[in-house]
Length: 81
Image (cartoon, rainbow, N blue to C red; front, side, top):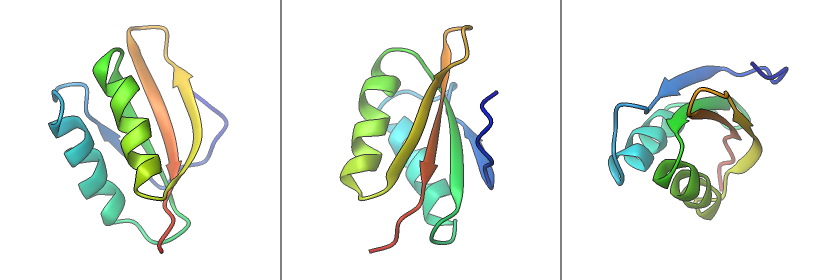
């Protein structure tokens, strides 16, 4: 696990696109500005699409970490506009 402190965690490894982003966005929307969300996702489409979609929403990508088990953890800081 990364040395990044996070406020909330969501596991979307059981979801497929576009539900991966939807689940991550719903959880992110529940956080306060500046809080950090850890999103656990599968390799492939989620790793390609979820970070890009979250960045397009205006949030800050802190780190994408390879868990070395076919999954990744994406750390995102919520930024309210």
